[in-house]
Image (cartoon, rainbow, N blue to C red; front, top):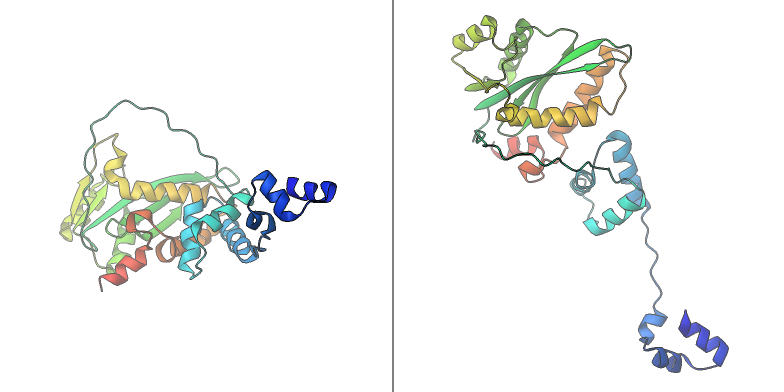
Amino acid sequence: MLVQFMIEEHGVSKRQACQALSVPRSTYQYIPKPKNDVPIINELEELVSKHPAIGFWQSYYRIRRKGFIWNFKRIYRVYTGLQLNIRRRFKKRLPTRVKQALFQPHSVNEVWSIDFMSDSLWDGRKYRLLNIVDDFNRQVLAMEADLSLPALRVVRVLEYLKEFRGLPQMIRVDNGPEFISHTLDEWCRQHEISLTYIQPGKPMQNGYVERCNGSIRKELLNANVFYSLKEVREKMEEWMFDYNNHRPHKSLGYRAPIDLLEAIH
């Protein structure tokens, strides 16, 4: 530092050196306090090891939910210092399209959304995932994984949910063969449930479950290598519990689905 150089080389006082260089003496004499970032580092490393695809804001709100009061600037400084930033691709510019409003339910069991996903095991075998979401609080009600999931399996899962959750007024699905089958249609008629189909080629008309599918793809399927269906089901149950009980959702005001469910009871 120039102030120290002038003091040592020219024998001037601190006051004279600071005055000559227009440096406040408080700035020269300031001694930074050591910061103990070890607890933050431990929390971030634990989160990232458990959720490899997690971003900063998910990390921040998860840490805050545990009761820690570190502000986001400090956590972000440590987060970037650990080089945990996730690279993101720029979105391609798309032509303007007419958007259709997605119906937003106002109570539990008003609308459920159902959709399928597919992925592969390490040995190349294909398997499918069945996901059922309550659109009101984004809660994942059920996840099934198997090599084949026909319409009868969908009905069996819905019957299981009926026992402890009740049934919705409406079920929203796409035009997959399992959903347009007579089996599901007849079951919905028997239980006086409105079975609503989205328009072909417009997946965002089923946006709540599609958003959930994106999280499943990034945080579960792409983040793990599975050698068997048993491993898929074990990780799937663990992910679903965390998603419903601990994961902060921006659309819910950074609350977890279970928080919104408890708030209305």
